[in-house]
Amino acid sequence: MTRTVCVNGDYLPEGEAKVSVFDRGFLMADAVYEVTSVLDGRLIDFDGHMRRLERSLAELEMTCPMSATELLTMHRELVRLNRIDQGMIYLQVTRGNPGDRSFLFPDASLPGTVVAFTQDIPNLADAPAAKTGFKVITIPDLRWARVDIKTVQLLYPSMGKMAAKQAGVDDSWFTDAAGAVTEGTSNNAYIVKGNRIITRALGTDILHGITRAAVLRFAAEAQFEIEERAFTPAEAQGADEAFSTAASIFVMPVVEVDGKPVGTGKPGPVATRLREIYLDEMRKAAI
Image (cartoon, rainbow, N blue to C red; front, side, top):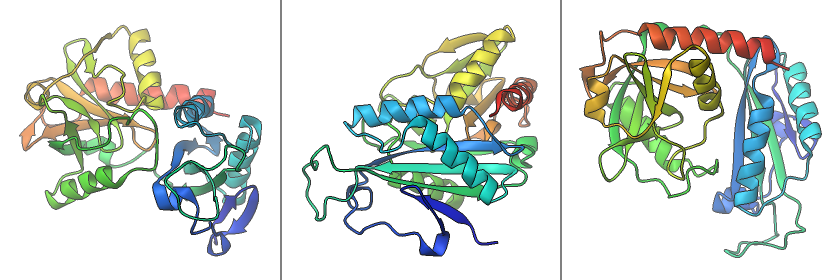
């Protein structure tokens, strides 16, 4: 089946979808994005993604030509047209096409470009990796200093994914100048010690994960102690468990860091339980 995508409100076969070569998203990575998971044909934590989208746009002095209501309608229509039961919807908003290349922002009245497409992932909720866990390596965090804004500047995270692949593992965790873990290439990072879940505090150096917020809320309700602080790779290696969270992986156990096992070297009970809670609660609240 040919995938249907949406460009500026028009639903098109993917082969017919086009964006100008002068669009600043293409030339300057002057764009923000969100990825919303779909389970059972419904959207997971859509309102949270829209709030973060609004924040990212505001931080870059951008506007979206579509309202939140229109974006919701578009997401639902893409799910319907592409018959998505489990998968994701990628949404990108750029500053638009000023008609030429310039480092200066165009006039604020220029309409932005809105693109969205689906990714069909039948086993998203039952991913085999959740049963075996991720192995990660650590690499220096060389991204720009405002990774709290969800921009399309993803070259270095892509390089981090490739470094992991070349090392024969699943992902990379970034480390700052002091040697502490910031986050994964496309996810937030955590360790578990006893009843404590430890993860880096929100700031400009990590993405303010929508899945992170939900998981920490559910963890607190389940009587876990939440400690927001930096931790080192060595601390992760000595932890009882570790895990990552993102819209694309939900809660993913991490069983190895830089070649050394975490805990038993297998997915632990805390990460496994939090994944179950998250999926159950998100399915109940999906729209």
